[in-house]
Structure formats: C-alpha cells, structure tokens
Image 1 (cartoon, rainbow, N blue to C red):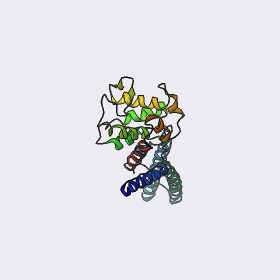
Image 2: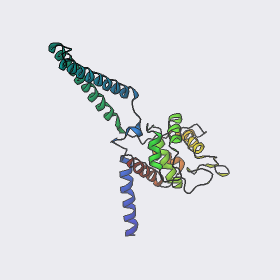
Image 3: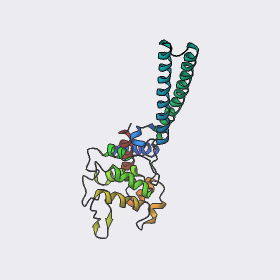
Image 4: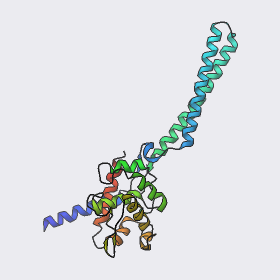
Length: 243
C-alpha cells in the first residue's frame, strides 16, 4: 500500500513539473532557429565598409610617408576613415546584439503552436533513432499544418520509441478501421499526423483541443494523462539537446 502511495506521489510530482515546464527562453544556435538574412547582410556591408576605411587610412599614411600627400590632407583622411570605421563598429555591435536576442527563444508546447525550429534542430533531436535524418519532414509538416513538430516528436516517442517499435512507418500508432494505418515513408506519416492534429483528416476535435492534455483525452483516453506526461518529458529532453 505504501509503495503504491509513493508511486502515485512520484507520478503526481512529475506531472506537476511537466505541466508547468513550458519551455522558457533558451539560447539556441542560429542553425536551429534560422538567421535573419537582412541583419546578416547589413553586418556584411558594414564590415566591407570598415575594410575600405582601413585601406583608405593606410593609403593616406603611405602617400604621406613618401611625400605624395601633404600632412594635413593625409591626417584628415585618416581621421575621417577612423570615424567611418568606428561608426560601422557601433552598427555591427548593435546588429550582433539583435541577432543574439533573436536566439533567445521561448519554444511553445501547445499542440497548435509552431516552434519555428529548423530541420537541423529536429535532426539533432532525433540523431541515433530510427527517425534520424527526417528533420526536413518535421519542419515542412509544422509549416504546412500548424501542428507543433516538437509535440509530434514527443508523440512518436510515447507511441513507438521514435519509430523503433512500429509497423508500416507509423511511429504515432495511428489506427484505422482495419488496425494500424499503413504509410509508405516516415515523411508521409509525419505529414498525415500533422494534418490529423490540425483537424484536416476528419477529426475536428483535435483542432479544438488547446493543450497536450486535451489531445491526450482524444488520442489516448482514460490513461490518467500518463501519455501527455511522457510526451511533455520527451519534448523537454529533446530541447535539452539543442542547448
């Protein structure tokens, strides 16, 4: 009896942590959250301007040293080039700070909230599993259906240990009237699952469920939300691989 009570207490404690552990801000590599091409381009332009300013100053000093440019003009040119260089450096520092701030991301756990993570991020999470190398499929599914790909990965672990214990490329344990649904590839299964949760495969209740626990009540009813606890735990452990 006591051991049963302890077990129940531990499960409840884990559930409390899981439910409240919606990912806070974590700093991720640009490889995992993408880069702002406009900011990158601006930094490159300022760096090129710095290089030109440096060359201008060096040329003025050289011409002054061989008597081909008077001292006043040379010194004024150097001072102007230095001002340009420092102004560019201020811009680069500001833009770099903006890039860093963009990497401080809060990853949503809601089943209908897009993470914005890249294929590289999903590949990192799934390395060493049967679903390794499917990062592009998760990214595409999330963008086209709006289903949270991190949540979907959590489901794949809860249902089949990331595809290790499944048939017919069905890591989500999706059922049809005749049993487990058949898929010809991981990609097609991932896309179908995203559409299913988005309510695009005839089950609108999934689209109305606003939490992982709400999906649990439809996908795996009556289990005391053990399924959603495992999904959340997987989501947290997968995110930890990106930090």
